[in-house]
Amino acid sequence: MEKLIALTDYLKDPAVLKKAGIKCNPENIDSWAESGTPEYLGDTSADDGLYLYENTYNANFVFEECAGDIRLLIGLIITWLQENDPDRDELENSKISWNGIPYDDDTSNMFIDLWFYEKVHLSLSPEGSKASRIGYKGLEYELGDEEVSTADNDETLPPIDVS
Image (cartoon, rainbow, N blue to C red; front, side):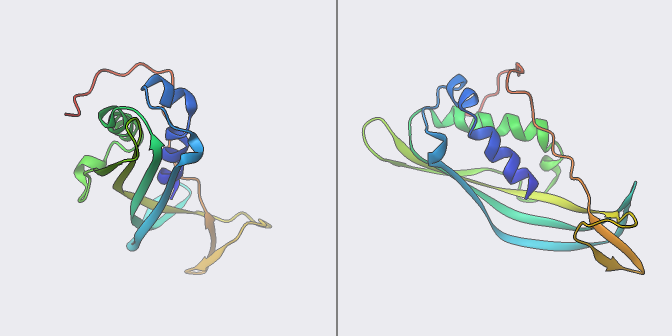
């Protein structure tokens, strides 16, 4: 769930929200994963180990009692996805869906969900490693580092039409 965690951290950044005109206390933003499905990849090689399976899951976000234009909030998500999940357009279920419920005259609760696909990387475990490991085909593996880059918050991006 590396992408879910990274996108949540980005959306909770007060500077990111302020720049987009979204008024929301970061404590009122929550996220979780549902419907996770691992798919075995058949020992796909990686430089220092293998990609054993791909996790597919529905990422859910809720923004409670927030103010601002939903188009800009979705724009934040789309630009983050373009920077950090560039292959998603080739995948099934790459669309974003959203719902909104007015809370009062100025604020609303916004619900956004999308699908993530993440390969699970296993690295060969070095001798004497204290990390959690699994044995597979006579070798010891531990979780490898997933590459989820996060765009610089001050980076200027071209305008995106989200209408």
